[in-house]
Image (cartoon, rainbow, N blue to C red; front, side):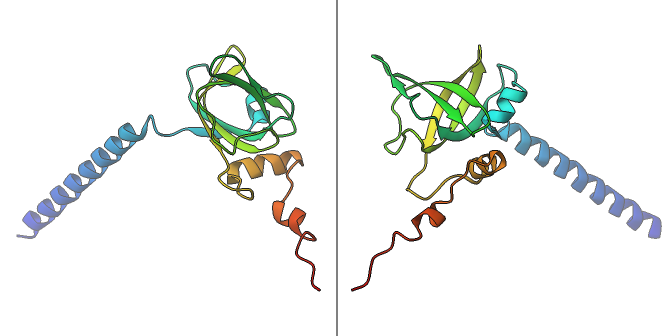
Length: 157
């Protein structure tokens, strides 16, 4: 009797292990196209990724580099203060997109130019993605909007 219970318990554990492995494999397979790694411009300049890899790059839109052509193609440079990467995007940019503003861009490298498929801009004047803040802090370029806003309060009468 004990041998049968032990055998049954081992079968249940084996079935659970196989089901867990299958579920993990299916989740990984389903998310394979949705996982995009984030890199700073310095990381991309230091170790260029393969042209087939889709990833995100973020930083500030470098001042004086935003060029809107006659077509829908827009070019600009994304910088973290340590390196700048040229970006080309065809499409409509978000309303809050502009020079010296934070951005995160999804796409891949092609001949030294980041070919963007999606451009994200911050959604208000104080928000910036954590990855972009970390990359800018690493280069010593980050300016905290809360610290800059101090002293700009309303004056009492």
